[in-house]
Length: 105
Image (cartoon, rainbow, N blue to C red; front, side, top):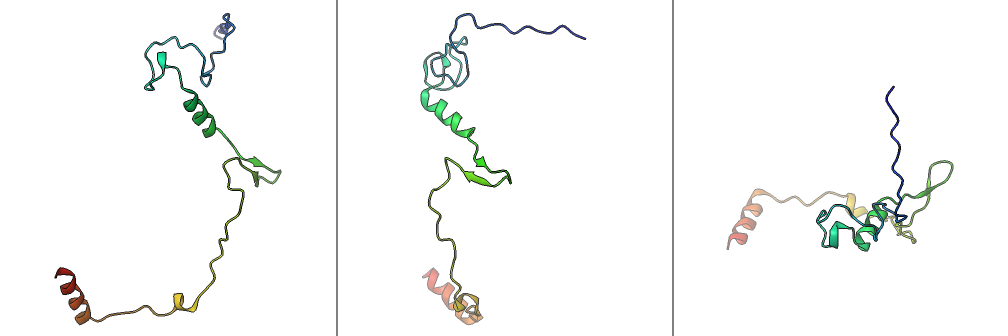
């Protein structure tokens, strides 16, 4: 078996988490953002944290609550109407030719 690596202890006392806005960045100029020294802006950190959000579920696995979920339920039922299920209007070849000529003019 190989040797176990010991983790280096953060001696400075400052957090170095990737989602910390105030963390010092050792790599200068890294990152595509406009922030100084390549550190993440507060808006970027909030956006990245939003991606990690997960909904609360009950024991059955059904979603109970989610922060990004709409609070009011929309009326999703569409009432049936006879005219939607009837025959569609069909035109003959002569009317179609007339329609094409009108569009070109």
